Image (cartoon, rainbow, N blue to C red; front, top):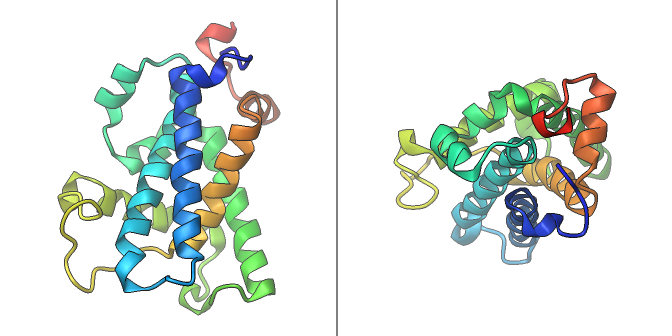
Amino acid sequence: MDFGEDFFETPAGQTIAGAHRYLSAARVLRYSHEWGPLIQVPTLNLLGHGIELLFKFPLLAGGMSTKDVRKGYGHDLQALWNDARNDVLRRGALDEAERALAEAKASGKWSTDAFGDRPARQELIYAVEHMSYLHGAESEYALRYIITPNTYAPRPAFLIDVFGALAEQLVKNPSLLRWWREDMGAPGWEDDR
């Protein structure tokens, strides 16, 4: 994939820009003075869309068509997370989870009590799995339509800190994805061979 001047006019460029917008909007809501029950579900909805777009970016940058990505994954965050073509982004998210949780504990910016003894990486894997359920067909798209009262949701601040940081890095420099792949020793994209 060419990450030149016209990159943000491509489907991959539009996708990473969209991920950044949704995750940034979720951050604004979560850290606003208005944070509370009224905006929790809309914040999670933005977060789900942002994560979905973030994990569709490497697929599109790797040469898949938007039609194939849409047809193959729909809104399934778990399938996107588990796809081998997202190994690099998944590894980055797991690393970022450790940084975000350590920073949160040190700064006290949000309570870490609910995490208990679960390591940051394990917490992120669990949170993605649960967000996939809430964001997808199995829950009848609960974050978009009707969410059952007292439904558990992952901590939005943690997910925003993890995925928002990745999206911001990639929107500023999309070629980081290629460099991360090379650092990991991952196979190149079809159009790079």
